[in-house]
Image 1 (tube, rainbow, N blue to C red):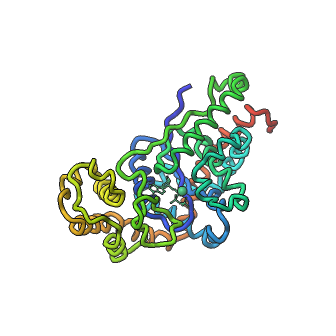
Image 2: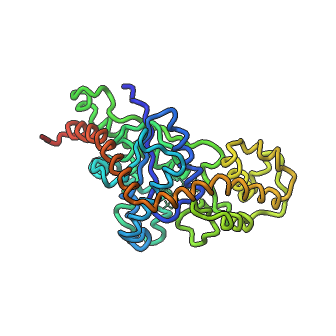
Image 3: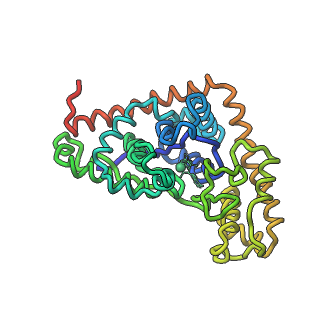
Length: 348
Ligand code: ATP
Ligand code: MG
């Protein structure tokens, strides 16, 4: 069966949105709007998989959900042409996740590096939700039978798991799928879209660690709401090495911090890294950093300002989410009804 092409992706309402989220995900979301029908979700069910003192409690969750929605709109996502909503408003996510919890195997989920990293040493104390996170993520995607999912490199393993779950569901229920007239397969094998020079933006303090919301040092990341002075300070303090920039891409390989800054510049300028190096290769970091400050402020400044303006109007944001949820629900309920019939749950 040929599936209708559709894009789905999500961002958690936890902590500050940073340059990694922007370049690795949100910028891609914006670009894909031209070619596909897109569904962009603020994944609040995922947010509560970490301890409550980490996600911040009910007031912080509401605030962060509106902030991520504002970031989507401020970056250029059109919530009228496409769909923007928060996950918990469409019950199909949790319903399908339960079915997938029964399709996915403990062994598959035990291999997920995100769980290992986030659970840390005290695995006994991690929430069951954190362990089952990837099966909820598969449900998010497959609830809309999405064919393409733009994500950062860190989510590649979860996308592979999503395909494994789809395939096992298609196999386990093959007879029922055919008997119900859905063809040979019910769920698509979704393609991850992980492309460009900034699929894994690294910490500004340590080029071997992913830029992350949870890093204790605010100097490790550039937040979308940072003002121009803060952006400039963080880039000037970013870790580098004493060598001048190389002129060829191969020269970046053993130099993670240089590679990261060049990748960020390339993504912001929408140029390949090689072209950035043709311009700045052989020069000192100080000159390159000045140019990086300029382009960062020019690109992020208006997004941050628009985000701050939008969050002043929570009623507007909530109306966007409500409208998106209604339209998402219309698609989701078709899938859920079909899944119930395929699995054998009686419904009226
Ligand atoms: P957390 O640490 O809470 O998981 P996060 O920064 O990873 O937060 P998510 O909401 O989990 O944020 O991810 C949203 C999107 O941003 C995903 O597509 C993810 O792959 C992408 N992303 C996150 N960090 C980076 C990064 N450093 N570089 C590129 N993409 C990233
Ligand atoms: Mg993440």
